[in-house]
Amino acid sequence: MSHSLSPVELIRRKRDGEILSDDTIQGFIQAYTAGEVPDYQMSAFLMAVFLKGMTVEETRALTLAMLHSGAVIDFSDIPGFKVDKHSTGGVGDKTSLVLAPVVAAAGVAVPMISGRGLGHTGGTLDKLESIPGFRTDLTLDDFRRLVSTIGVGLIGQTPEIAPADKKLYALRDVTGTVESLPLITASIMSKKLAEGIDALVLDVKCGNGAFMKTFPNAQALADSLKATGEAMGKRVTALITDMNQPLGWAVGNALEVIEAQQVIRGELLTGRFAELSIDLSAHMILLGGVTDTLEAAREKVLETIRSGAALEKWKEIIAAQGGDPACAENDAKLPTATKEAVVVAASDGFVTHIETEAVGMAGVVLGAGRLTLDSVIDPSVGFKIEVELGAEVKKGDALVRIAFNRDQTLPEVKARLERAFTIGLEKPGE
Ligand code: URA
Image (tube, rainbow, N blue to C red; front, side, top):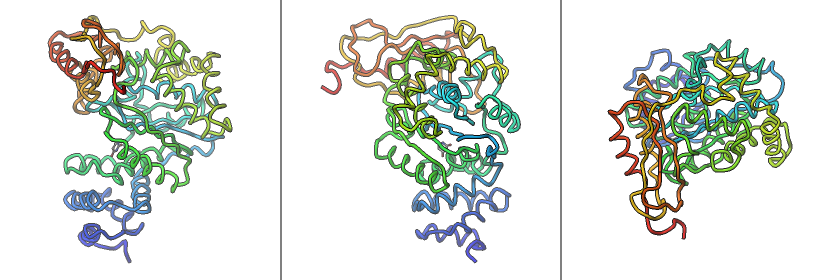
């Protein structure tokens, strides 16, 4: 029988481009999670997958095997659709903080398991934890209780969720096998499907601050994620959105909470960040079956914001997770940096290029992000981005304001930001 193939035989078959059966993949992942397959054989298998790829069917089987390596939450006792969003990560992307309260206020349950920032990208958990008292290290039981009582729960990965992914990801990281479509797909989807969702909105970022730098690569990832989610019976919408500049004015944890709250309170409803937040929320509400059209879903989003229902839900979320709900209406209660420095335009012209990944890395140097999972971050520091791509500037105009506490890293942060912004004579796109 195929699932009793020895690891070496299975590695050879994938090396030679053969298609593996569901049972074979399932048995191999199960044995690896149980510690019965050594890392060196799994490494060889991962490289064979990296080089030869996988069909949609194999990717589905891999996703399923990784999903069932741990707990899969069952929310079938909660009426209605449960919908989440997944972003492939970027700089200044705080949309989750807006859509959780907005979509829950519109009557769609949002079970959201998020990650921490790593490298140049930020993470939702770090942003939430900049709210004094807010806890994300909750158990799956707490998570269930939150989703069934207030319609939304925002927690971090727990050891019970997709343990195979944890082991495999660590191995991919050190074997040059991260950038593989089937492996990325199975990694993302196994964790998301463990949340007990019925539908998922994917925000695949594309550009110089994203995992996928080019449109064809972003499209291929979006297609692979969507095909796998749908093959597992979920409703999936995939958007590809721009990450050639930071999303919105804020980069850095507490600052990003402030920008998200401006949208939740209805003070900021235009611009790239607010518009994407509204768009993603509308797609979630549509998938959740509250409206029949995207236009009606968009209206519903604006209604929850304008009526104050989204703000009330945000306060409810903060209070339920141990935070101070007064922060929702009073930004001054969030951690604030003590000092400010400004990076200015060195000449007249237009902002022709923003090296977004470099902006994110400057944030890491400042203390807003982390290089390893145990780096300590300072929630109060970050950047206020004053210009968008294409903006006309005069010499001396502010490009970025740096909110900081410690003088030591400032020169390096400033130098990195100066290099990240290019001022040219011609307006881009003309
Ligand atoms: N994010 C994940 O969770 N897994 C990957 O493999 C890549 C990005």
